[in-house]
Amino acid sequence: MNRTWFTQHARVAALALLTLSITVNASSLAPLVQIKATQSHLIITTISHGCTQKSDFQLSAETGPRLVLSVKRIRHDRCRARARPFSVSLAFDTLPKAITTRLERGESFRLNNMIVPITPGFLKNNP
Image (cartoon, rainbow, N blue to C red; front, top):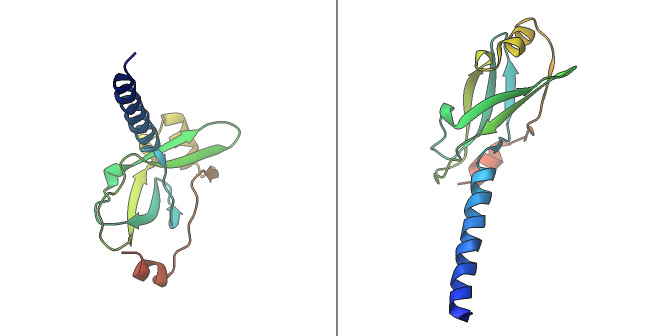
């Protein structure tokens, strides 16, 4: 077997694995700065570098004795603007009806996302 052939195929395989890992991690839990729940929405605040949009987020739920909600970031912000808070309202009616009904009744839930505290200094020092 030719050594050059092997090296080229190893590089292609490594690139394929890297692409796969980026695709898998693209739908990860979004770190949140603040959350507020209303009867029909979850209002989240996260950090944006200028290209964050509402469509970048997806609300999902796991059922069981207690509801568990997760806010997943399905597209990352690749812009380079100064970091700033970005708020978005995610409607509960995008979830299955059984879960929406439980939330509308005021049932408590646990949020899977990490809450990250920020300070004015963080925003100023993170271009």
